Image 1 (cartoon, rainbow, N blue to C red):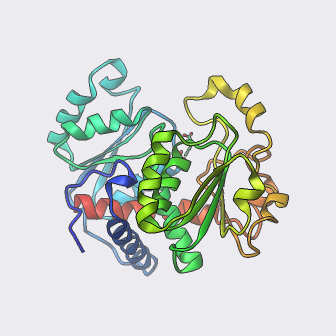
Image 2 (image 1 turned 45 degrees about the vertical axis):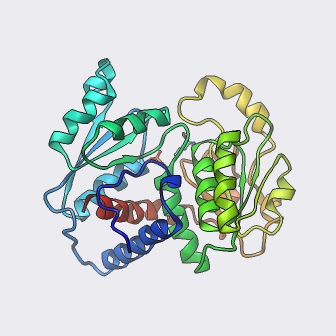
Length: 310
Ligand code: CP
Ligand code: NVA
């Protein structure tokens, strides 16, 4: 295996299939050791700065607990409290934090902000969600899919709803790994040409089949996993009314689940809005793996941190 030490984790397309598999294998290993009570010291004495410009439950807790479980510590920095909120530049913040800590995790708006942070940082920077991407989420999701199906290649995912950050990373991650992926999104909520071009480039190599449609049945037919995300992402609150109108038919419910393979799993990054993008019945149903995904955020991110910061 190649060393990932010192690498930033900003978007999945920066990593090869082999490197992503290495992260997933490490996540499985770390999870197994955690379950049998082994205490890790991989990041002993190391500190992670965590900058949040948006809300978070899973990401905040899993990174903070993950650092503690690897023997290190994490600092929670809300952008309201640090000088970024008063206009200090990302470049200056990055150079200052690099002198104190061993890694920087950031949840923010534009992808260019995390790229800027990484450009000026001497320590690894981790993207904990931008408007464009959510790569840590997808590593946890792939770990979950491997646990359920014992493989990734050749599976088919159907994503339904708004192609935002989670869908973009799912699309690109799938195209790298060789997972077929169909996205059913209304016009105006489909992936951009740029994202699609990137995905198609990887799909050519991996053999993944990509379909973008506004037809749910076409996307869901033959799928092993259904995936959705909220209709109103953080930062899009002003568009709420229009989004509810435009996306109202793009819901995972029992009828849609019935179009997938019999043993299909139901996935959601959470938080979920029951009765909107997914029904309570399906979210709570036997095929739902949403809490396994949430748990695996911890293990997958511990693997990422151990590999890049260790
Ligand atoms: N899925 C996810 O990133 O959740 P949080 O917004 O709670 O971190
Ligand atoms: N698309 C959602 C994901 C939340 C984890 C958002 O950006 O709010």
